[in-house]
Amino acid sequence: MALIRIAALSDLGPGVMITGAAGGTHLVLCNHNGTIHAFADRCPHRNGPLSQGNFVDGRLICPWHAWEFRCDTGCYDYNPAIELQRFPVVIQGEDVFVDA
Ligand code: FES
Image (tube, rainbow, N blue to C red):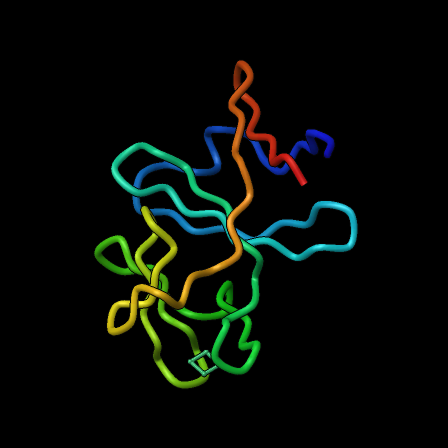
């Protein structure tokens, strides 16, 4: 595992979703109530690109079939056993890193 800088903290204000990459992994990052979360940018349903969907009321909404995932837990609304792949986030100064 290695810390990889993804963005400036100022790019990820509350309610904001961005995309990034760590090594060969595409990521989606979201700020829910001041806490930043990072997930693989791949929906567990049929691999839809979550970063091309929406981020509304703390939920990442897949653009392909509208499955909704809680940003704080990474869980699918209707079946919490289905989760996004999560990566640890580290804030250092004004920078956001992901441990990937
Ligand atoms: S691929 Fe995401 S809801 Fe179907």
